[in-house]
Length: 334
Image (tube, rainbow, N blue to C red; front, side, top):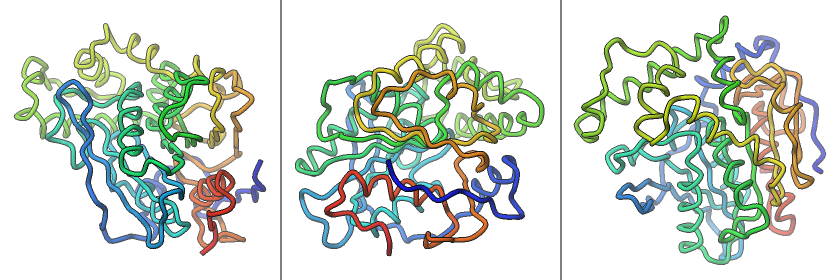
């Protein structure tokens, strides 16, 4: 257990909606792109891309981290860039993964990425072992990527996978059925329509590269992420419908089987991820739930820095927790 300072939201961002919007659009400290790209063969003709940032002085047995983004994100999403940079400063080598068909891998996949693609995270983990065979690895997932991370950890149970020894999931939608119902209710429709708009734009951009999209009409355009998943994600991924997709892909039924040290970080006021699912989830003894009253979705922008170097409270909880996995090497303060 790590010592966690209380989260006190910025006075202009007290509610979950304001935190969420600010977290999505405020970049924080920007970093120049210097990563080395590696392609990962997924075994079905598709490939994805890992963006490898290796800090100066990193040694073969030092820690590495694999970061997975959320819906409509990529390696360049603000939280991915910020947290990878802070981990690099702490001596951790980071691999930011563009999920199947996203970011730098947009032209490398014929199948869509989705919230159940634990096999892709598995393939990336094996690739990282090839690149740094002696480095212990932490898997870090944000939002949709958090569900993927927990699903993989639950599927593994007590079975080892390469050098993976710990998992962090930030705001994971562990019950996709409930999340789908929640995001289409009330003011949350704003996020649903935003996600669906981004995904429709992605489909428009990919039609020439993905012949399988030719049989799926964009008219009328889906007005929610659930409708998008029903019309596109589910059929393109081999599911009967959106309910089948959400049920099979949710991590909640596998959480009790996780054997790796695992941190779940989420909030009670997240407008995208209902907190009730964490109250009824059966967590394994190796899983720590860090639940705050406020913080929004993948945000946690604090009132003041406190003991942290900046206001991004969420970032430092990730860095601090990873530091506990490698206490002899990690440096969690600049």
